[in-house]
Length: 169
Image (cartoon, rainbow, N blue to C red):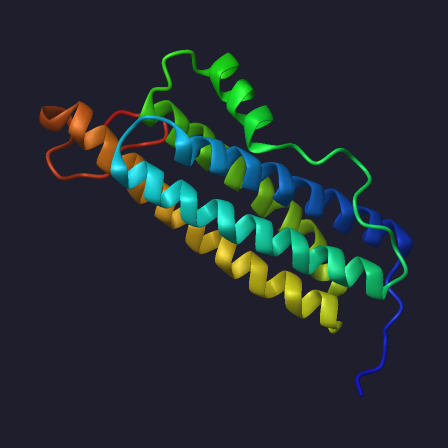
């Protein structure tokens, strides 16, 4: 039976914040998946919504193992996220949604990167590392989705080259 390694309470609070981010991200992706738009964006967002919800559940389990309460903040619903999407992007432009999702993934990755050294050698660290790897793959998928959407919008500009972060070839 594995031994429970003490993890610094400050680190556990950061894990709570990460679980909160994953929960909010899942709601955002679920709302984006319901949005009218391209099939490629809907499929990507639907997969990411499920993945982020699962990551939040895993983090919550690890918090409970360490006698920490799960994130106390109100869990956003897909409806809340949908309202936020409409406020940010009234036209629900697919390329804008993909770019915003990519920025959110970058923030999430930075949160994981801050926690990995603090939890190295623990079961929590192993779980975080696995989630970090999946989040990196999601970022790559979102980049590809963004590039496909940009190529559809500006076919002459891309000529088969990836689109930069600014949305230009």
